[in-house]
Image (cartoon, rainbow, N blue to C red; front, side, top):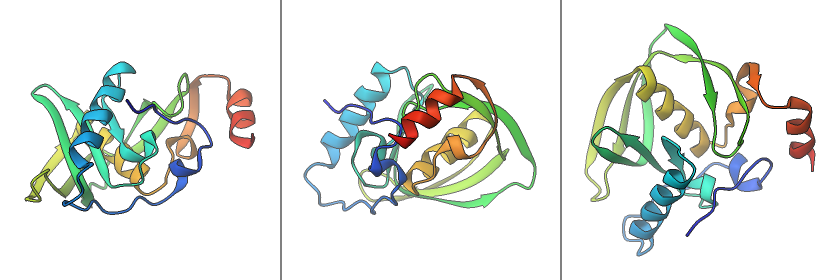
Length: 160
């Protein structure tokens, strides 16, 4: 079972590699991601958060789990909304982050089929947050104002 990595782990700030569909570990990685996310009561997780540098995202939906491989955001609305976000890799820290309200995204499913959708609200936010992880971008650097968590402690952990 994979564990979620935290704070200044080097994998969190690296660009993730595209998924290779012939990888025998793909199904296991997805299963491990879902388990890790459920254990920490998350709604989204990117593979780099379990120290796997691949472009895989899993998101909890009302209908189960959505798996996105090699996702790309293709369009963002001009209208942005500021909402509190947290991250499983930064437990206990929350802050206000401004992101586009709506997006369009494309990806490949587990069979390699191309998929696309438009998303708004919470789904658009979670998708943007997780795609940021795939690009080595961390939410703490997008926070306009921290709302919970000791920021002095956060910066100490980031420096260690």
